[in-house]
Amino acid sequence: MNKHNLNTKKLVICLDGFRHGGTQHAILHFLPYLCENFNKVYLLVLQENKFDLPTPELVNLEVIKYKSKKFFDVLLFIRLIGFFWSRQPDIILSSMFRSMTITCMTKNLKSKIFWMEQNTYIMRTLIQWKLLRVLALKVYKVICISSDVATYTSSYIPIQNKVVIIPNPITIPQSKRLSRPSKNEFIFIGRLVKQKDPVLALKSFHHFLEKYDSNSLLHIVGNGDLEKQLKNLSYKLNISKRCIFHGFLSNKDVYTILRQTTALISTSNIEGFAMVRFEALVNGNCLITTNTAGTDQYLKRAFNTGVFVASPNKVDFSDKMFKSTNYRYWEKKVIEERIKLGLNFSPQSVSSLLIKEFESIKN
Image 1 (tube, rainbow, N blue to C red):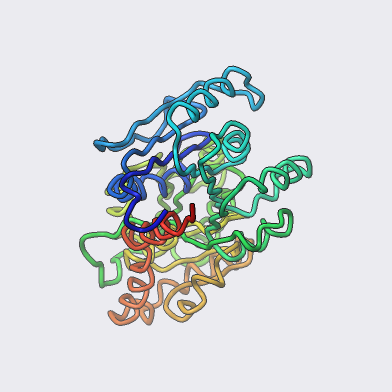
Image 2: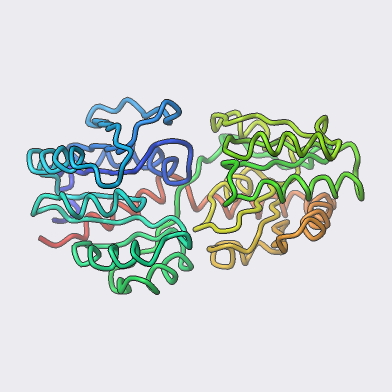
């Protein structure tokens, strides 16, 4: 397989689900460029959900969704075996544990499998890692979102010679924001789940209101299991009028809010590298983040331009939220430095890295 003949090949992308998440948004960014290069692209979603993200209408894209909820779903195995052996794809790109394992078990002989690892999955069991270790023998390459993810994954699976580091792409806004917002407003973007620790974001904001600016606002973009708890906590802390719960929004609406806010608060416990951080930077925002995977690799050179790494406690977070309001970080040249950092992660640029790996396959 060489760089000139992908247009005769078939690609399958397999995911556990297609609700809001970093992997799903990355795939949406990749799809137009993959469809330009491949003869046929199939998107397989193992468990359909009413909250699934919409998929684009592309001429050579076929979306197939199953309603499978169990890992050992015999009917799904039979269907996937039939699918792979009838369609005969050349490349399979799978992400998330269930998809990664099931594609290895049901693939056709000629297809090359690429795994996409998006996080430091500390919640995986030893049995799951042992299964991946065995199935990795069938994998052509493992795409990791950051060097930290690659190191962590390689500590469980001997894949060092198969690892490729490719970040997720982000949406690049059409216009630049080169001035400081008139008010101190902050934004949290992500699923409202324990991994993202939105409770820490809310408590840090409460501390900021008490110590620095009682007129500030916090925009919370996302849904999840902790939504009710967060709303109740905002009432308990008497800051409900200072917190705006938006639910999930389109990229266009998210960017509208980003332009009126000072900084993004990223409080995750674990991450591969949340690309929403770059989406904030490319919009000119400052960033306060925990020191999760990829932070040092991707953000180290931005630490003097309004990017702050905070300890996971409300006092340090709120102090750095206050620092982000300092006018030194809102000089035009400093804002432009933040924006420049995000421009390297455009969908076109990152997709070209992925396509290059597909082109490098040797028959």
